[in-house]
Image 1 (cartoon, rainbow, N blue to C red):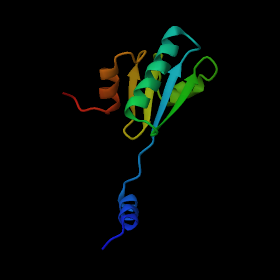
Image 2: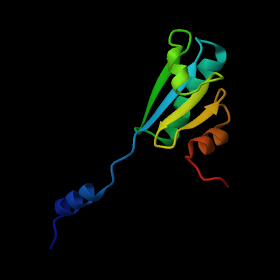
Image 3: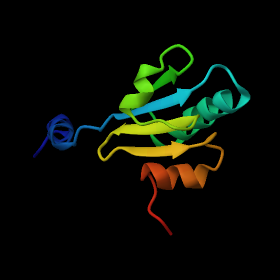
Image 4: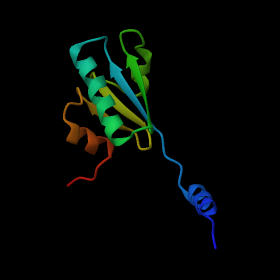
Length: 109
């Protein structure tokens, strides 16, 4: 007869590692749209990626060179670096359904 601890150990070994989502949010200072974009992104991540995400906020007023690497032409812009492929969403991220589809977090219905 198996002991419960052995079964739990076997299950934990077979669980796949959770993938960490790397997200970059490009903003220009503390504008209302930039603040809204960060707030909306944080709420979406907590709801759909709890414990599986990292958000890097890049202020283009202080670090303009980083915009070239991700080809940023409008702000605010969210860039999903990982998981691949890279995806971009422009705007304040207030349309949750659009953001979920853009990040590929929910299949299109």
